[in-house]
Length: 213
Image 1: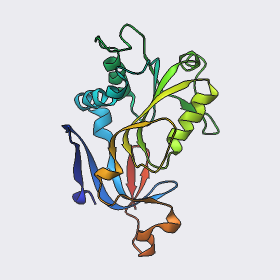
Image 2 (image 1 turned 90 degrees about the vertical axis):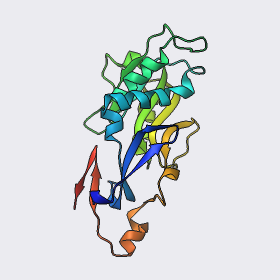
Image 3 (image 1 turned 90 degrees about the horizontal axis):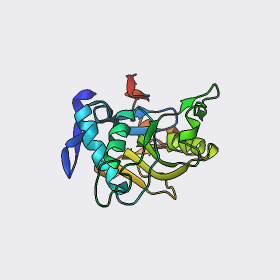
């Protein structure tokens, strides 16, 4: 399966790339014809810094930011993104401010919550939500619901990959989209053309990886 992998690079910065594996994959809710390996973007310090620079650009001169809420292992990028937003510049709004980087936890009902000592960083604060990918929208919607509960003001949504199926009033700033991948598909199992052709699953996509069938 891995021998079918190919790389997709960001046009304006080719050092930023994601590995893509074609196949027949399932998540807990959908089937897709590609597995997107975003780990290097999130864990390689040098690459994560470059990613953060790109993701910070839409906010530098337009948006006051108090907190970056990181989902799906994006904390390293979030920290560099905060650093970029705090750089000195004539038109940079956040210079000399404080920006905090936090991650919610799940309670026993699998709902996202913030610990009591972190809630002050959310309530009535300007927040950027940073997620690894937006496909079905389940992770993003859970984060937005959580932030609404605690009274946070979402001023931006950023992601490494956006499949483009989910629409929000808030603009979503994306590094890569489904347009970068040939014939990208995300469908319900009952509508999956690969299942209808009798093609077996290659792997189950889980948090930060996959399990071969």
